[in-house]
Each structure stands twice: as C-alpha cells, then as structure tokens.
Length: 179
Image (cartoon, rainbow, N blue to C red):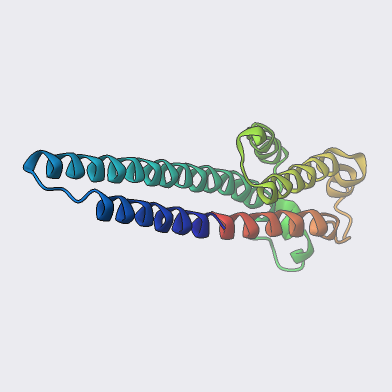
C-alpha cells in the first residue's frame, strides 16, 4: 500500500512539474539554472525520504534478527540432547536440561524490549516463548521432576516438556521468517 502511494505521489509530482515546465518554458540560462535547481531539490527530497525508509527497514530487520537469536538460544537450552547410555534414551532431553541455562535464556527473553518491536506478530511470538520458558523453568524446579530424576524412575520425563519445546520452536521459526 505504501508503495502504491509513493508511485501515485511520484506520478502526480511529475505531472505538476511537466505542466509547469510546459507553461513556463525556460528561455535564458538563469531560467535553466532555476529549473535544474528545482529538479535537484525534488530529487534530493525524494532520495532522503527513500533513505529514511530504507534505514528504518534495516533497523527493523536487525532488531528481529537479534530477537530471533535470543529465542534460538532459549530453544537450544531446552532441546540440546546429550549422549545417554543405551536403555536410557527417554532421559536424553531431560539429561540435557540445565536449570541455570534455562533460567539464563528465560531472563534473556524477558529483557527483550518489546515496546521497541514494531511487529505485532513478533511480540506475540516472543511472549509465547517467554511463557514456554517460564513453564519449563517451573517444571525443572518442581519436586516431581527433580525427585523422579534423583530416584532414577524409568518414566518419560522428557514428554513433560514437549509442548513448551514445540512452542519455542514455532516462535523461533516464525521469527526467522519475519527477519
């Protein structure tokens, strides 16, 4: 829509300039100098507006890439599998979960200045990632998970984190496409 408006404004301006040039055709060198100056001024204004638009888009993309990196850090903190002995595959995800890494990733997500993000979808995705990390950190600290790990019960603890990990993956994928 913005592109269509810019095309319309450019065409309108070109029409006005063409009409003015036809009506007041330059006859002396000073007239030509005035016309060249007028065209130069119009081109300079247009170029500065384009540069401002380009820099704002570049800044937005850079901000989204940085946010994507933080969400990716959070995802890696909960999905990085370790080598586990044969017969204990169900604990591969849980064995890799480090509460300190998860808390660091959660804190990093919480420090993202959402008020500076100019994409509503990115704000929703980061909010979902924060909520998923909050739940994962809470589960990692819960007596059920800690007690089950210490008692070496052969239950599939990793499935407790599957929904939150999937939410983090979805947020990470969406932010990668947006950036």
